Amino acid sequence: MLLLGPNGSRKTTLLRAIAGIVPYRGSIRIDGMEVSKIRNYTNLSSNLQEAFSIGVKLKDIIYLYEELKGIDSTLAKEMLREVGMVDLEKKIYELSDGQRVLFRNCLALAFKPKYNSTRRTI
Picture 1: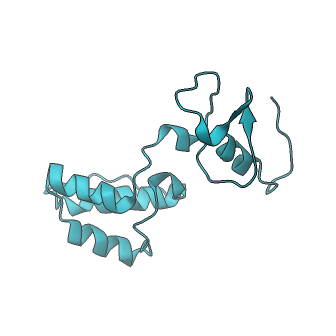
Picture 2: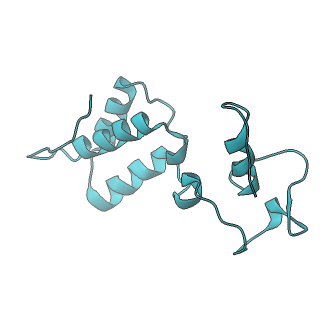
């Protein structure tokens, strides 16, 4: 299959719908089967990062790190608010690359490490 179109013409959105990642109206069928009902179908593949990311919310990731690694979740949430990331209901794959970096940095700093080796790009 080849999908061509100008920037902003919703090509990626269509691929996300085909992969079952985003809701859609109407019908999308692969080999005669409705995409929303397909499970464990190996004849369809995607390189969309969402297909390979855990679909958990930011707040759930913070909770997991708090429970498993002992981070200060209050500090993590405070730092995230300071950088404008207030919607912790978002899923990690819904963030921009820059937001992912901010999220990881806030998590790393919430460990209150004695030594910190965060990588910065400007």
